[in-house]
Length: 171
Image (cartoon, rainbow, N blue to C red; front, side, top):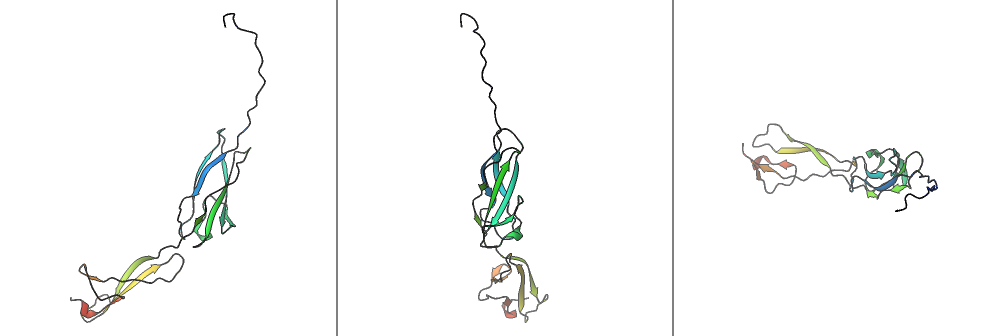
């Protein structure tokens, strides 16, 4: 002001405390997980004080505690089960409230055909050819196969099974 500085006054001391970390969001990475795939998380965690944050995980399968690592191995669940993870964050002084991810349902995994062989290896025009598929199902379900025969790229009509009659092709 125009009269110069006024007398100095003391302000009361303020102590700023530590803030707990905050889990802003979290989710199991796959919204439609399949058997055979481990489950991982996507998390958004902050600590306003810049402290190092430690995360604790508790996975639940059908409501039963099933793992405490950042990833849930595929052997911990099967198809048609519900899974979620509860996460706690701590900065060594304060802890966040528990955060539960949205629950995901484990879906049926599709079977995979890894190879098809043909018997016999050297057919002639009188020999039937048999397709022998090799496949596996992640849950161990029985696999049924559908066949579509082609000769030189053209579909063969009237054949629906794994056997192509020798009179259906020419050498």
